[in-house]
Image (cartoon, rainbow, N blue to C red; front, side, top):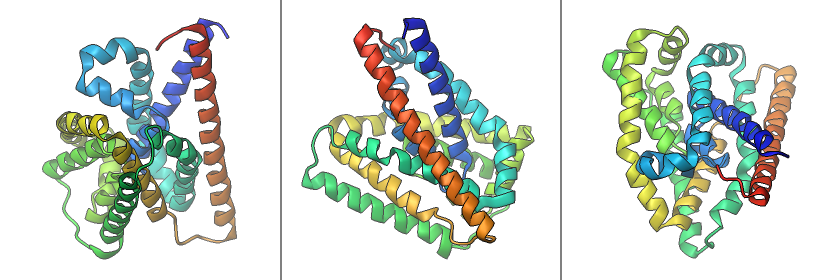
Length: 286
């Protein structure tokens, strides 16, 4: 594979991953940050946020297609996701469950790069229990709803930003519990100026404020942080498993979409390894 072919493959791969992360930020129960982790994008993204002068020359070829893909997924696909959820939330959710499950083995390998201490296992268990308990409470116990407004849309943007920086935080689930998810999604699909003007600044502010703190923790406590993320991934995936279906046909379609998501994640992982091996062999850098 030539250098130009390698770069084109990397660009298309990053565009697809960015679109999936953007869609994942919209889909209930799915964390865009988790998808960034499982696609091996999270750490370069955090480096760019915290040390842009040093990281941009290294990662700009990755960040451009990721940014384009994220915008396409987050804004351009909002209408399609809203329609898909209206037709069958279960089938749509299973597609993303398949994506996440398909990347768990790679995530497990990444978490163990610097060893697996007792503290790392404890981090995995505690984070999994905390996330599972919190999401279960928000989705099944708390029944608080609010009236959508400019400030509540700003709050939704903050939640989305936290979901990007803190893997495992499923912002859409919190919005659904508060009654904000559907009006927010409809506003994005219609490109409503009020919704965009309120949510995007909140998103950017939360990302900017949290990025350095989260990145510091990864540098100082890598094994604890990554095993904690693995706990987030496992717990958030368990919580979003649909419990009701419209019949045998929907069950079969859900299984098909779950398998399709798993295969897509598997192929992306293989493509990653191939690209990394080719780049290492040719001495090409991102």
